Length: 400
View 1 (tube, one colour):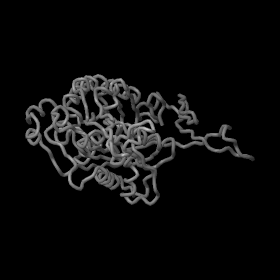
View 2 (view 1 turned 180 degrees about the vertical axis):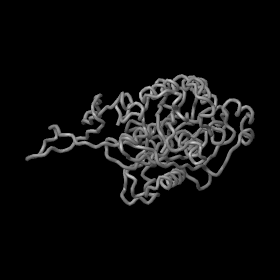
View 3 (view 1 turned 30 degrees about the vertical axis):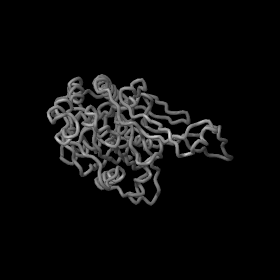
View 4 (view 1 turned 45 degrees about the vertical axis):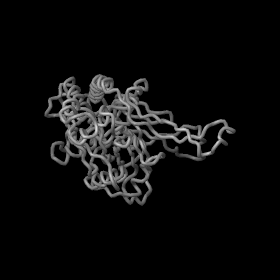
């Protein structure tokens, strides 16, 4: 579990002698104390006669747990749209797009494909790699800003997977930062809630909210899904060392897809006026983005966030094996890597093939890197997401 600063226990093995915090979980939140043996204290009932009233305190019980990433999977639509394809509908070219973004192709949902279908496919692959049966899943976190139902798509995932134990499933909406937030949330449920297997899915279909006449945005986005299994483990095997999460609503004006209301004449006719409102049908506008401002925001806050998470984990930039950023723009990835002094050979990027897939981009890139043998068990990864909200966050994790 973490305190407000995002420091998990236990610390990385090399730092155990310096930090050995314990976490006490009260109804009001979390509290850390240093210099005590590693343990997590969860509220429980006291021994003795009589019953406690809801306002009385409870004696804590010990529950030492860590969490680790044990499986990953991904899925993309069958339809590929190249830069040359886009050049037939907007004033652009392959060279213009590639130089400014690093993107060559993207995948887009079409026909009978669905975002939920992609999420389920990615989840199945992750469970298979982790050797976890669907009935062993305790929680499903669907990180998406484009659910296929206003009330969330997550509950459809365990249904499609055939989970017989009806695990809790809900959506997390944090745009391109969603997957990082999902990882941190999974760790919190494992450490503080006693969950054993949490399925974290990043899935988005931003192509459905793109203005295909706007060359500033339509060239950027693609659809995909990626998933990981976060599993409870002994504290000594803990694989999520530290995190750093933020949001700033002031920046919403630079990247948004706001709700719009269209007046209708047919819903209640003229009777609506007697109730004091005009009947409306709501929908979301296309994605609106100030590219220059988003670029400035990302190259400023992402290095700071990763540096903060590394400091909390007791690590330096040179000690990480891989830098894995949200795949938004290759120039952003390169700029962040330069500021953190991470050499190109230790940067994971598959942006050229898929474009910006929002919450799916980190798990999609991770899955490809793991299955290709690039990322191996025991490797340390600095991951960061950033995007609409504005939101941003980073996590220092170990694979396997």
